[in-house]
Structure formats: structure tokens, C-alpha cells
Amino acid sequence: MPKMDILDVKGNVVGDVELSERVFGIEPNEPVVHEVVVALLANKRQGTKGTLTRSEVRGGGRKPWRQKGTGRARAGTSRSPLWIGGGVIFAPKSRDYSKKVNKKVRNLAMRSVFSAKAQDNELRVLDQLTMDAPKTKEMVGILSAINAPKALIVTAEKDDAVVRSANNIQKVATTTVSELNVYDMLKYDVLVMTKDALEKIEEVYA
Image 1 (cartoon, rainbow, N blue to C red):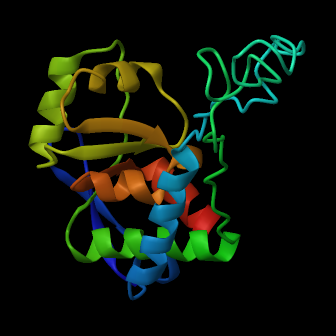
Image 2: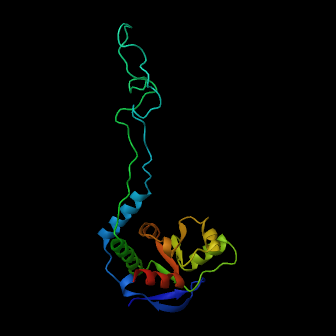
């Protein structure tokens, strides 16, 4: 099993932990990771564009003028696409861009990224991360001490003080184990997690 040093907020090694071979020691599967990232980005698309066809535009039920004798071209509705205020020919419509990914595939993608982070020394485990009050300067000091300038901080449960301390730091974000996803992990250079979060991750993905 791969081992990982446990650090305190000052960057000192205070112990070590054996990582789960199944979660942090597999051969990363890049095609699966790519599939899941594409699905995540597609699912973020709203697909809300849309215009009205002639049958959907309000009004236009009465024939504008009689068929013959006026000298004008015949017209059946004022909502014709040829008229101002009319419908649109071949109008673009809302579309569902979402892609379905099987649970086993998502699980494999997560374990692939966890393993890649561990193998590339882009994983940091903290014994704990608690703050009495939101302090950006203190959070910057912690990340500097553990050499994680561009980091995704993962906690077992949401901690408002930690979230607010990291909010104003560029290239740093926070999340919880339940909200963690492949795209966010790849977006940041270093994955920083508390020991509690690590235990929960191994429980979920092992």
C-alpha cells in the first residue's frame, strides 16, 4: 500500500497513513477520466436558447385583408416569418445536452485521478484544518507551508470558516467529499484533504 505523510498546518510531518491501494494505487485510466469530464461539462450547459415559430407567436389569427381585389400579395396571418413581428423559420430550440455516465465509470474516474495525484506528489493530507474565524492571511500561510499554491481543499463536512478563508485566494477552492468531482480535481495542481476527508473518501470509493 502507498504511504502518505500527514502534515500539520505549519507543514511539519506529524505521522503517516497507509493509502488504500484500490483508491490511490491503481493505474490511471485516461479515457474514462476524459469521458467523465466531457459529461460533467455537458451537464453544465443549460441549453435554454429558443425562438418562436409562426405557430407559437401570439396573435395573427385573423386574415389581414381579403384574398382578392386589394392589389396586395395574399396573406393569411400577420405572424408570417416574412413580416415584422412574425415567427422564425427553422427556429432554434432548447436542447438537453446532458450525458449519462454509469456509476462504476464515475467511480473508476475518481479513483484514477486520486491515484494520479498520489503518484505525482500532488496530494497533501492534513491532520486537521480548523479555524476559529475566517482569516485569508492564515489560509495563505497554511497553503504556503505545505507547498500548495494552486489547491483544491477537501473537507469531510462543510466548514464555513475554511470556505470563507479561501474564497478570496486566487487559484484556491474548497469542497466537501460529497461534492468532489473529477473536473475540479484536475483543475487544481494540488489536492489538499484533511485526515477525516481521506477516511471518508476511502470509505466511499474503496
